[in-house]
Length: 169
Image (tube, rainbow, N blue to C red):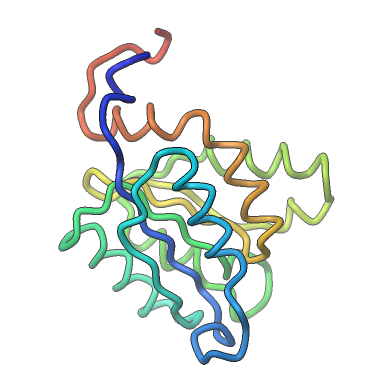
């Protein structure tokens, strides 16, 4: 295998849920994502549930990237069309480069299972040397979306961190 598989990348799972942050709802999507990521060889270095508030989400992402140096952050929740869904806006404020192909691939593939997939406004992008990806809030939707992009995540992180191997290898 390539150089990108020679070390373990750290990741954080940030669940965005007003009810979850108040202890009124179990976080099934965050738990499911942590399991999938661990099973695929990622080190889950951070996990938190926060309310669907733009400033709280943004500051959490910035802290995990700038102070904790987490390689990849997966958010779950707050990506739909509801008035309270602000995860993409909070993410857009902190990223420096967008990676639209990840979000496009997730929406396209998941649309084959449910037409509701096109309602997701989730984005993906880079802040410094970290990858941030928004996923839906349901456990089923979050895990199905993550499964779509899992095959490219190690290579994406390798390239984000300055890896010089060709993408075509």
